[in-house]
Amino acid sequence: MQTAAISSSRETPPPAARETTAPAAAPSPPRPAPLLRMARRHRGEIRAVLVGALSVAAFVLAWHLLTTYRVNIYVRFMNVPSPADVLESARTAFATATFFQHVAISCRRILYGFLLAAALAVPLGLLMGRFKLLSEIVFPVSEVLRPIPAIAWVPMAIMLWPTNEQSIVFITFLGSFFPILLNTLHGMATVDPVLVRAARCLGATETATFREVYLPATLPQIFTGLTVGMGVAWVSLIAAEMISGQFGIGYFTWEAYSLVQYSDIALGMLAIGVLGLASSWAIRLVGRLLMPWSAR
Amino acid sequence: MTAPAFLQSADADTSYAPPKTTKGRVEVRGFGLTYDTADGATDAVSSVDLTVEPGEFVSIIGPSGCGKSTLLNALAGFLKPTRGVVTVDGEPITGPSADRGMIFQQYSLFPWKTVRENVEFGLKMKGMGRSERSRAARTLLGLAGLTPFENHYPDRLSGGMKQRVGIVRALATGPRILLLDEPFGALDAQTRLIMQQILTNMWQRLKISVLFVTHDLDEAIFLSDRIYVMTARPGEIKAEIAVPLPRPRLPAMTMSSEFLALRRGLMSLIREESLKAMGGELTADGLQGLAINLEGQDVFRAL
Ligand SMILES: Nc1ncnc2c1ncn2[C@@H]1O[C@H](COP(=O)(O)OP(=O)(O)OP(=O)(O)O)[C@@H](O)[C@H]1O
Ligand SMILES: [Mg+2]
Image (tube, rainbow over all chains, first blue to last red; front, side, top):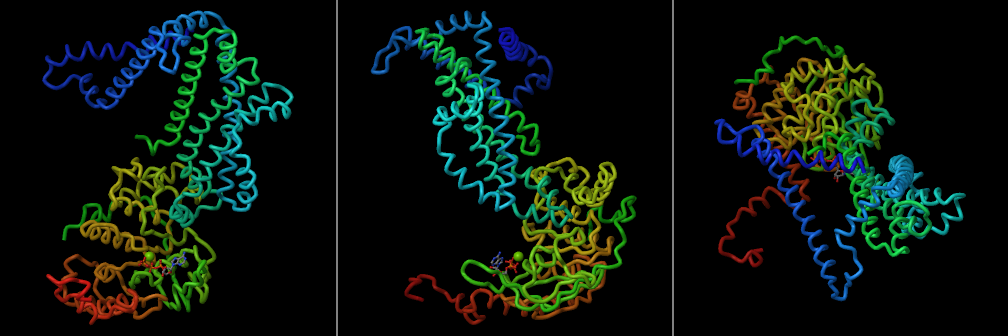
């Protein structure tokens, strides 16, 4: 509740301020005011933000129209909550702690499952790329397990793990494990051999070559894997929560359906969307910090 | 001829002095290498004998595919000779080492390291401390006129600058031998000239042995003390030619009669081999034939 309010009030003022001060400042000094110059330099980004805002607005408007006029053209919008309904149910949901508990629990499961997957898949991929034998041992098993969707693991996971919580984290882990592993492997396979040779000629030992060449050269691919893996982690988590959960945003959404609280369904879906977006942003941010050379 | 300023300031403070190298003798005896591929064995190099004396600048020229890179990779320690021995200062080569710096035809700077970090790499591998190696790298970059770019990532450099950084990086560890595989092949003529002067300058300053692979005759003559000419694949040494031109060599020398005489000699040696390398069907007469006028005729009928 509070965080949402703070972030929204912090986000809005700068564009508004820019729009009002820039035209006023422009005519007086001979060279463009700093704000105007900044606006010019970031023209592409400003346009992207404006277009993005417009497209979201159009989506909400379409949603509003379809639901208020209860359009029924094969797809039935009669029972679909309108944006106003969802806003209303968000207001009530945000007033209590339950909704945030669901969100927090889902986030915790993602964090555990995803971090565990990254912590295992990245080193495994790096080592498999380096040691052929390991790759020959692991690859067949991984190829058989990989096509099984994480959701198909739900019954097995319930049998395997003592608590429900652990089986959900396990399913989230499985979902993100393979994309991360495969991308890391692919990154290792495409390391430029000339760079490896260059390092060896400069006196790098086997371990130093691994650390100084293979790892950084594979980093972009690892981050591609992490981004994809995060997406799949959310898919798997929500499915697992809907099937076997008692908490979590997926459970919240499913429960809303059972309790015929249709606007809560949309609220849950929106929350999942926002959380998914935020987590992939977080990964991109970390990637940019770790790979300053590819910043652009 | 006006050399870039940083080349002339030879007496700039050189607080960084790589270890004096008194050795660096390369000896290749009866070297042969056969690649084992899926569709049989490929003889890349049949039999090569060559020597690089300490502090000498030696070039290898030969037609494409004659095994020059193969030979250089064996010297660097990446390939094991199938036949013969390759020694440095009497010791057989067992693997890559910082004693033998190598410059590759492809740019090989680490994209994730800045220019200075690239130059520091070899020193870091030697276990030199952070501040010490940063000072050494700065000095070397200064000598090569690269100080303004020390914090750039390689993808922001031009091709010439990348190879310059590559040379500085290879020299930073104080190798006894520098191996260069067509390092300036991708550069334009002007940049190439400047790079040649930089290389000459560094070589004289550091007194290391250089083995330089090129397919550019002028480059070979301009830079070398001696030139080996290789035959078409499987490569052998066809001729060994001394270049008695005085040093320092200036670009104006490329017009001198000695230079041109050397060039003519090398040209005829290379030409035969290049024709052989192109499948053996092309001969000098055949090339003449290609020049006949087919204008207005149906090419297929003409053939
Ligand atoms: N890894 C490899 N496996 C099999 N054959 C190879 C391999 N590398 C090179 N060859 C073959 O060996 C021969 C010599 O190759 P090399 O790269 O040493 O030639 P080069 O003289 O450097 O040619 P260029 O001037 O075109 O660079 C060529 O015929 C090439 O096809
Ligand atoms: Mg080659």
